[in-house]
Image: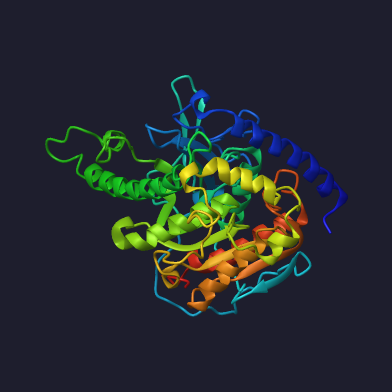
Length: 448
């Protein structure tokens, strides 16, 4: 059973969250202060971005859509300062792969094929450094990539939880979680600040997730355009230097400039989606749209996704929904209120495509989905439906293991009061080991 501290915090959390949900239901939308959309609540504790590597990860915030509040926070690990791996003739490894220890005490059981063998770790520190950007008044402006060849890291697109109506990509808890994943997995985490309900109902959050994937694709194309134009800027009759070209290149709608951290260090051909709670629903939607689009998203390639305690629902109750309806933190009554705030009144249904991944006529076919790791908690009323979705994926030969954690509650690895528990750390390590199979290169080829 969860500890006494968890139980007490759950009571307090449920009281406050349910009160806020009811207040928002009673507040008419035409009295909302910001129809433009909001990505965080005043009661949220947020963490300021820091573009220097004070704790091994630099962060920056970017508002990517001039018409909405959609924003992202980029988490760049300090390992990006290491020199890129040298290419050369392929050689067989001299020793067997290292196997990472998995805490079987923290995880109760797993389902499906779960090969936890970890790939080679090439994180080496060196004297390779970026530029120290300073403004005219000598104030530090954060890390800027040097013009030398930079190490390329995979991209992890992360969607926070909060039941559609709360949470943010820059909250203290989400900032801590993303920093942990960026350092452990050696990836650039792009945390999405999607618009919250009820100010922006479905499909706003889903469209925001897809819009960020489009933005990443544009960034890759802008970076290539910048290189080609910059290399010719010194030719006869050139009007701009390379730096000037990088500042002036924009996309087709004139809204984007080259993002230097992603241009220097991002490898968008190795993109992983990670969603927490309702963010897992967004991640799965973005994965489906990426599959449907095919090469239209090139060079962005979604190679895997991680669904952490998905916010799935359905009209036919599962066993866990019957037994755990009044469980810790996010109980069924609260989540039902959250869905009422998120879905338009005319679309309100427990079998809405946003909530039930197993409805008929789903597109695209499940067999086309990327490898999917699902994390579930023993004391989560939504666990059975998440397990059923994973089983449906495995039935059509998609790699889709499930990790179920004993004595755990919904969002046990993301709630601020539980972030530093051994169980939360073990979960992060398990995710990293699985993800690295799909983002690591071996002998200059993808590991999968």
